[in-house]
Structure formats: structure tokens, C-alpha cells
Length: 525
Ligand SMILES: Cc1cc2nc3c(=O)[nH]c(=O)nc-3n(C[C@H](O)[C@H](O)[C@H](O)COP(=O)(O)OP(=O)(O)OC[C@H]3O[C@@H](n4cnc5c(N)ncnc54)[C@H](O)[C@@H]3O)c2cc1C
Image (cartoon, rainbow, N blue to C red; front, side, top):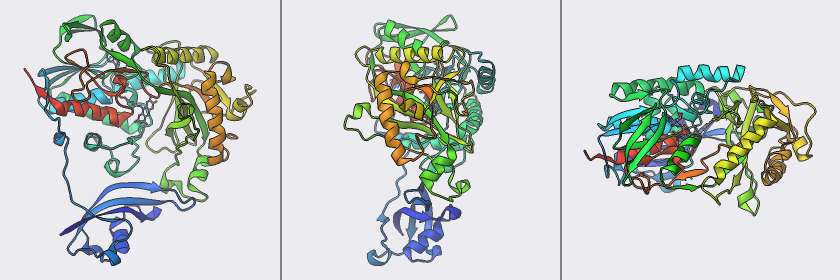
């Protein structure tokens, strides 16, 4: 047998999945002469407006060598099949850890760390300040309807972490064996298996919630203990080693502590600083959310008369190509067919984000348009800047979680609107001239960005609504760690994971960080 890969195999929209026929046609061979055909990746190719199609990367065997001239079309490459697993990591089982581990935070990083540590025979207690996802859902609905904010149970905190009520995009900038394992685990927990092969997988908040229940059951089946409503309140460090933790007012001895508390647990950064754990500031980005009619984005990105039931709602990725890259606006975390959500983690503050359901069939597209921020002169410079912006937005919005908003047209003319178009934001909008309270440098970069984006997507300005601010793109603080052991550089027994540690961004990379630690862990006592 001879093994080959074929890259970018085109398949018509209405023939999604019919890969064998398309491959045989490209190779000029009979479909039955193709063996062991596997899809490695597929994507929607919409580079040619008006004619989007599926593009597949496949691996397959044939009995006879394919001859260059005849069969070696553009995408054909000789190949071999490797079967990599997380245990092929060169650092597998190299990090000594106590056989009992306390994991803090049930977001993607903490859940996947707990799951894979349990699978490797460690005993795990998992502490989450928030509630199980079903109860959390009720608190979020109550917040949207009645503006009753719960500090420990909200869009950011509770089982599933910030990932649970999110857009549920599962793409990562670079895939590796850890992120592949996260996606395969998700399939095991009931998610459609196309997430493993689709280049831009998305499951939506409705399916994420179902998956979380199954993960909870699996952790329990493996003997893990999940403690909801239980916050980490303090850490005791003696001679540079973690030796105890305080949870719900009770001190417990601790030999190995895995901190996966996310980037919104600001109190944890303050606690770590007070206990002498090394932290550093980190660049992040800040800006606003914009909403557009999804029909406009579909038209501009896919072309006229394209059936979005076949393609899904269209996305955009935009960046201003300015010379000074540090102030360029770019799009982030775009949610086709999604809705806007308030995602404060502290009372008296306001931040926005986007989420969607699995069908992504809402009439509105929203995306963050953000600008890099360098507030690195002090460790907490970025965090203070985030907090100040969120407090200002809360005040401008009338102190009841209504969000300041402005059409892009009015933003470019520096005046507040008399009235605002409809929005999916659930707590109401207040017309505001955003230049009056959001950092001027950010506003200038956004203005430049909007002009540029309107050339790529005509109508971006005319039909765009800004809802502000978007402050939580990534952590403004890093808990400095050794990249091999994932342990704090100055505190033994403290392992820091995920977005809060400043080493991941997004659901899959955060969960992958959890697996990385479990794979490297080796029982020391
Ligand atoms: C609205 C929204 C939409 C998003 N959309 C996407 C998307 O489409 N795709 C994507 O990849 N990413 C998305 N993200 C980002 C993604 O959710 C995060 O990158 C990811 O959840 C980070 O995982 P984590 O485990 O590191 O931290 P988190 O998910 O933040 O989890 C941390 C957990 O720790 C708990 N915790 C904090 N402090 C304590 C304490 N003292 N004691 C006990 N528990 C504590 C918190 O309650 C929380 O549950 C979105 C985020 C939001 C808010």
C-alpha cells in the first residue's frame, strides 16, 4: 500500500462529506481503489465570493503508486500515518507531584486537569466558587432579567468557567496533540465528532452545558470530589513551598495546588502578590463590541444568493494594517448569529462579550474590535486600567448594567445618538459619546480601524452599532511559571494553568494546558 495526503480537495456545498467521489475525480481513479480514507481537516473556503465550497485535507491508501504527471494534482503529497498521543510528549511523567492534588477552578483548564490527573491515578479535590451549571444558568437568567448580580455565579464564574456561556468556538491558532485530545474528549462527552476535523469547530452554549454535566459525572465516577460553592480564600507558603489552603473558612494541608482560576479572578492575583508569588504584567487588548445585521456579513463575506443553511452564518477577521502595530485595531472573538452579554465579575463594573447557540442562526453578528494595550509599568497597571474602564462604563450606563452604546457613524462624528437601533444586549442600552469616557488612544485606533474595515466590508460603518466596553480579551497579569513543569517560578507545589495564569487564551488551549500538566505529572509520594 502507498499512503498519500491530498490537501484542499474541493467539494461542492451541497455535497458536504462526499469526499471519496471528489478525491477519485481529482485523481482520475475509481473510487473503490481508495482505501482507509480519513478526513484530517475540513473548512469552508469562501475566498471566491459567490462560490464558497468545502475544502478537505485527507489521508488515504492506494495499492499502486500514483504517477506524478497523471495523478499528482496540486494537493497530492506522499505521507505516512503517525499515531501520536499526549504520552508522546517528551516531558511526559517528568514532574514530581504529590499523589493528592487540590485543583482550584472548574473552568476548562481545571476540569481537564482534574479529569486527566484522575485518569492517571491521582486523587483530586476540585474546588469551584460557583454553582453547578444548571443552578448557574438560573442566576444568569435572573441577572439579565432583574439585574441581580451574584459575585460567585455569573457569566464568568461557576461550573464550566468563562467557557460555559460563551460562543463555544473551539478553534485554536495552532493545534497540537493536547488540543486534539481536548476535542476527542468532547466527542466522548457527546459533542458531534466533526469538531475534531472541522477547522473552525463551534458548539454553542447549549451543547457546552450538556457536555459539562457529562464531565462532572465522569470526574465523580473516577473518584474525584467536586466542591461547588467553595472558594479558595488563602494559601500558606512556608520555605517557598505551598503547605496549606483555606477554603470556606477552613485550613487544609496541601501538597500540590493547581490554580486554574481564570483571568477574571482578580482577588487571586492580589492574594498571590500578598503571599510573595512571582507575578508579571502582560500585554492584552481592549476595545468595544460591534453588532451588525448578519445578512450584511453573509452578503459581503460569502456573496449574493449563497444558502447559509449550507455554509452557516458568515464570520469576519479584520485587522488594520497600520505601520505602528501596537495601536492597530483588530477583530476578536467574532460571534456569527450570536448575542451580546454583560460579563461583569465584580459589582459596580460593566464589560461586554458575545455568546451564541449551536445553530448560530440569530439575525445579528457581533465581534470585539480591540486595540493592544501596554499598561506594563506596574504589575497591576493593566488590571487597574481594566477595572477603571469597567467602572466608568457602569456609571455611564446608569449603574444598572445597561451598556453605553453608539452607532459607528455617530462615533466617527464624536456625538451621542438621539436614538439607537435594536440590539441583542439583554440589559438595555444608553446613548453615549464613547470618546468621553473610553481611553482616547483606543478610540482613535478604533476610528481608524472602522474606516479600514468599511473598505473590506462596505456597510460596516453605516450599519454598525457599538456596545462598550470589551475589556476581557486576555489576562493583564501572568503568574510566572516554568514552562516545562508549569510550576510557579518561586513557589514549589503551586502549578498554574490556563488563561488566568496568562498562558492560554480560549476554551481549547486552556483545557489543553490542563492535559499538559496531567501528562507531565509523576507521583512523588
Ligand atoms: C462570553 C464569553 C465568550 C467566550 N467565547 C469564547 C469562544 O467562543 N471560544 C473560546 O475559545 N473562548 C471563549 N471565551 C474565553 C474562554 O471562555 C476562556 O478562555 C476560558 O474559559 C478560560 O479557561 P480557564 O479554565 O483558564 O478559566 P475560566 O474559564 O475563567 O475558569 C476559572 C474558574 O475558576 C473559578 N474560580 C475563580 N476564583 C476562584 C476561587 N478563589 N476559588 C474557587 N474557584 C475560583 C471561577 O469561578 C471559574 O469557574 C469566551 C469568554 C466569555 C466570557
